Length: 144
Image (cartoon, rainbow, N blue to C red; front, side, top):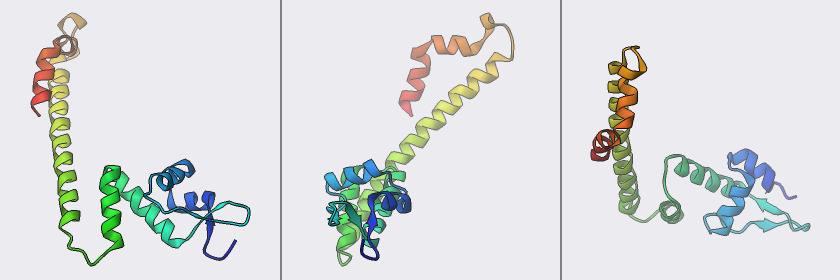
């Protein structure tokens, strides 16, 4: 194996991306087709590992595959204006803010349930009553 080339297992270890996921990224075109050894084993170089790290980080931030594809395209041509990258990040930020609002509503509902229970009897427990009244809880959470 030439210096700087890594078999798929080593590429997975170094990049933090699992072997099947590396194959998938190659299959869908996020990662260029790997070069092959004489024994037909996939070989990855430092650029491939950097690209895998980029993809992994973007996935951790919740970006969808098509957004990552666009971001990679922008990365490959650094002279482009960054408006497209900004738009993708802003869109993801809006999604995250909506999710935070939804989680805050969920937390508030759970706090109300716990506070109203006060360790009494199950027949008096607001947790059970609130859960039984799905229209009540659903309405508040759907608004968030």
